[in-house]
Amino acid sequence: MIDLPTAFNSALICILLYVVTWGGKAGRFGASFAIIATIFTYVGLGDPEPYRHLNILIFAGDALLLFGFVYIAFQSNRWWPIWASAMQLNGVSAHLVAALSTSHLSEVYYRMTSLWGVPILLIMTLGTVLDARAAKRGSFIEVF
Image (tube, rainbow, N blue to C red; front, side):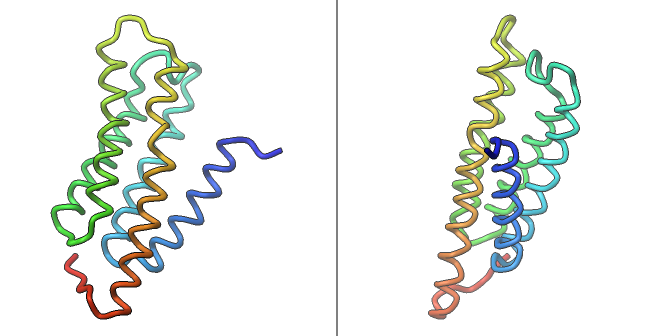
């Protein structure tokens, strides 16, 4: 049986390859930020109890991903970076709640920060599919 991290990593690799191949500049930038955030997360998971307290490395990766999506949203005429930014803001907010909380459960912190990863990947993929269709029809001009 495949475990959740293996399934997520497999989906991450496939989706990022698709987005890099078909997503134009916005897709390549988004994929780059997602890869960097993933590296920060895995380094942060080296902590023996990574979700017992605010994990600075995982928070930094998630904050960088949020700023990356916001940057892409301002530079692009695509909708998916706005959706991804909104979802990523929820994940970053979970880190801030954990920082302010004097007592929180590590399981809740883990679930709230990792909840948005899969929907963001799906939004990136859907946005790339829709952008490619619009480009084929000639109704889409790449700005970023």
